[in-house]
Image (tube, rainbow, N blue to C red):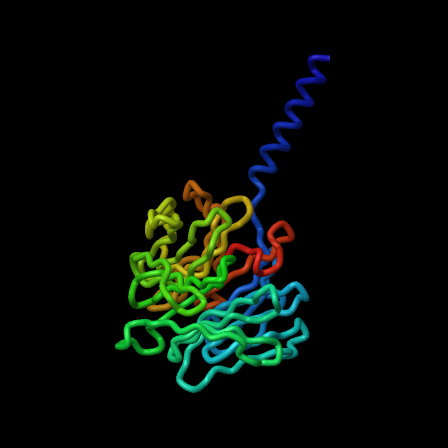
Length: 300
């Protein structure tokens, strides 16, 4: 009896160890900013779908399976069969680095150059416009990056060259402003009320509480042998881990992984690198079944 019990305990322990040692594998959607494509990558690391586009940035899988993404001058929604079913084209001279699908079916867009946030309906009509007020000396490229509409109806926007993240109301009035190191590229509102911010060439990922204090931080060299280059494109997973893009532009193409996943204790548990097929990935959405939700319910 004791022998049988010992065998059972040993078997259970071995199974537990195998479960703990099982490598993390993710299926994901990503934008290769410098490679000119939006892709779905399977758990083996193979590209299962791709769509060519100049300078893609934000990207989302919608509940209907279509892919919504921003590119240099506009936003598109395409089917898996690669048919364009919706499109917004911005005016001349602008840059678009942020687009977000909203629960009412509209799409939020942050425009550099026109210095505004807009919400566009499915007919292509602008149904809301919110002015932004960057430093007037900045050109379009230096103004903003990834913005998000918040649950309270306000908007959070990284002011790239001004090294701050800003919350504005529906009239464009600033209601919160937090300075950050580097050039903030992305901001995500977390369920706990904090902001998850990537700081571009600040080489850091921060979690900032409503009082402006940093409550979690991943610095440039916190991941052994995996320096953070240009931090961008984060997603907070349900298990508390943080996924973010390690953009490899500005002289780092072909070096270091494109994407990292870290625990709250700053332990690297997953990374993705494929320099044969990708140049500089700027946005990622994890597509695991345990993570998939409506876009406005995903912390990214």
